[in-house]
Length: 171
Image (tube, rainbow, N blue to C red; front, side):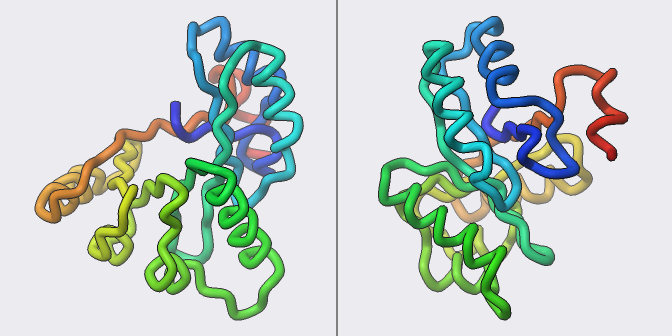
């Protein structure tokens, strides 16, 4: 999975980074992304758990502000630094507009996955159309991205281990 949330995605994820690492290792994965919403709070634990499990940690975040949603995964330390500044601005800067920032100053050191039409139309490097088959309209997003010549990626966000964790996820 590319979109993986831990308990640090407050009100969304239910698992600790060590649990995510163990499950990923057992599933035979080689990489472990962490894309908590507007947060790097679990990042240190994530990197430690991934390394301990023999997995390559991928650093990312799901950025959400108003109607704008984008999943960013750092491609380098420069990408990590830029993503960190974006998270800080979302949480601390009154009047900050995520959509405007991503349009005017693309994050080239990150992979960006989004269904936002304005962001897709800008055709910035390393931008992919995010297709979430669980949400209505994903087919329209695919067709729109294809008309622009943009690649697509199917996302299946992971918030919990199994159906038994659903109630904790809703809290």
